[in-house]
Length: 83
Length: 225
Image (tube, rainbow over all chains, first blue to last red; front, side, top):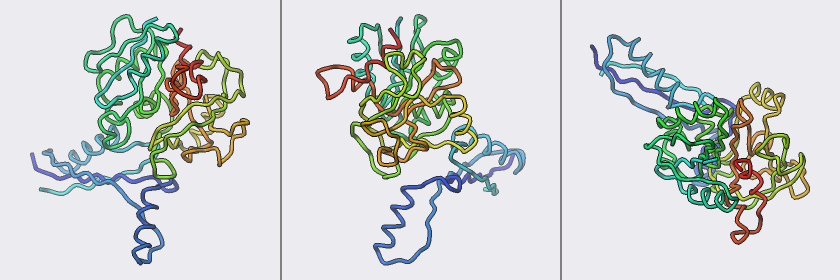
């Protein structure tokens, strides 16, 4: 078994309104910053032991499917590194 | 008919639901989620509140609590299930109904009376109304914006599973009457079985005559009678 960190990034699908991101963007603009768009995402770092990187990614993938993301509004990606 | 009102940590409309149902002469009791559904349950309310502090997403944690397996099993056997506000979020998170409820377009918590157009009146949830009726019921939520993919939305409309839409006092479904940016002004939908429904507005807060400005919500809860 090898120790891995699987990083799951969950973000809203393109085209789904993100009122919190819009509010954050407006606050940045109020501070004088110039930007054309702002997107936010949730990042989960999962420490786990697995046979290999593929097995670690598969487990993280299932966690995203079953809880971390809501497939109606979210896309997600999984990245695995050795810990 | 004994209605089980499922209480999670952070539920806060469970007592209101029991009280409104009792007022309508319907036997109802609160059920702590860890205790499981009583054997004589023949109706289920998933009440409003902030289960698990809305961690991750509103309803996400409660939707994965073990009692929800029992709720889904009961629903598939035809036991009527209604999810109200946080209960609607739990219902959609658990797959009982299509779509998702997420952050209001205003990015604010909104607590206000709204008008709803009754889109189906041929089922027990809305048997007290006529199709096209306008009822006034309050909302109180920060994550009530109904989102659903384009294809799933088309299916929802084709299958006639929209139960309520936000509208103005005259029944016009307009952007101005949409309090939270919901797709197609959807305020409540049906599950695969018409005995399963969720809605963001609170019928239990518009049932007791002494409580507020409207008793229009009583007709929904009367489905359990």
